[in-house]
Length: 150
Image (cartoon, rainbow, N blue to C red; front, side):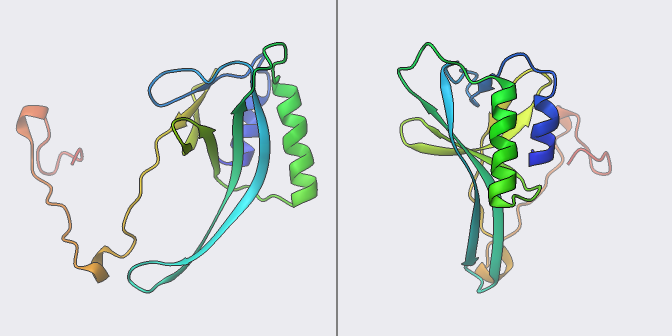
């Protein structure tokens, strides 16, 4: 999700809920401790210089069970962040403390925000000599060449 999509999703919500990829909910007493822009300037393994930017939300649990972050409050935090940090309409990445700090993508199912898994990838497969994955028809799964499913 982008920042504008997130702001739109917050409209009309009565309560915030974030769900981890395993289906567990982030405890309702979480806080958004940071909103920021992360710029990444790097060279991939093929020697190509790259730039990536994301907006980062950091979720944190405290032993503060008496307070809940409401959608309107998060909207205010986002507006302040946009104004102070000149945020663009970028993709959102969410940090959340599990066994270690994990980074997730963000989606919305109409009621809840879903933290989605992200994966590493080689950005220079051609330069590294990594063969392209073979795509085989799987007739048992109903996938045949030319069917558009594989």
